[in-house]
Amino acid sequence: MKSYRLSVAGRRLALVLLSAALLIWAFAIWSLASTIRISYHPLEFWPSLQRSLAAGLGVGQVVPALLMLGLIVATPLLIWNLLEEWAAVYTPTPEGLRFESLFGLVLLYPWTTIVAIRPADDDVDEPLDELLLSSDVSTQIAHPLLRFLHRQAFGSHRLPLFTGLEDRDELLTEIRRHTQSHASTHDGTARAA
Image 1 (tube, rainbow, N blue to C red):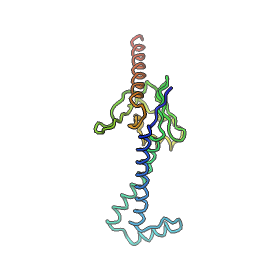
Image 2: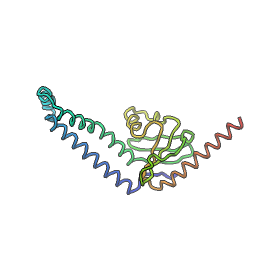
Image 3: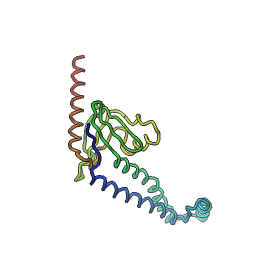
Image 4: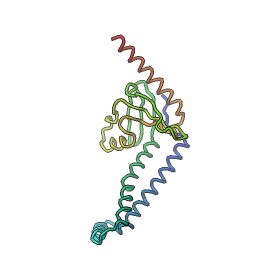
C-alpha cells in the first residue's frame, strides 16, 4: 500500500508558515507585556500585573492587549494545525483511508463514512480538497487533548487533502475508486434485500 505525504515543496511551505506563526506568537507575547507594562519574570508577573491594573488601563492599552491576548491563544492552535499537516500521512487500505500524524495519531476513515470529495476553496490557484464524512471518526483518539486539537484543526466531519501532497491526484483517484466501489456494493446489497 502506497502512503501519501507532503512533497518537499509542501514541507518547505509548511516550514515558512510555521516560522511566521512562531514570529507572530513571539511578537504578541512581547507586545502584550509592553502594552500593559508587565514583567514575565516568575517572581514579578503578579505584582507587575496588579500594579498595572491598579494604575488603570486606558482604551489605548485595553484594545491592543485584547488583540495580543487573542493572538497568544490562537497562534499555538495554528502552529498545531501546521505541524499536523507537516506530519500527515494518508494510506488507502481495503478497510478505509488511514490517516497518521503527530504523537502516534492514527485514524481509520472507513470507505462507507466518506460521503464526498469537495473543493475546500474555489479561489485558490492550488487545489485544496476535503473529504466530507458521515460520522465523527475522531472518537478513535483516546487522549482528550489530542482529540480536541485534531477536531479544531480539521473539524469532526471532514478531512482536508492538503495542497502540497505528493501524487495528490493519484490519491484522489484511489479514494474515488474505493468510495464508488463501496457505494455500488452497498446499493447492490440494499436492492437484494
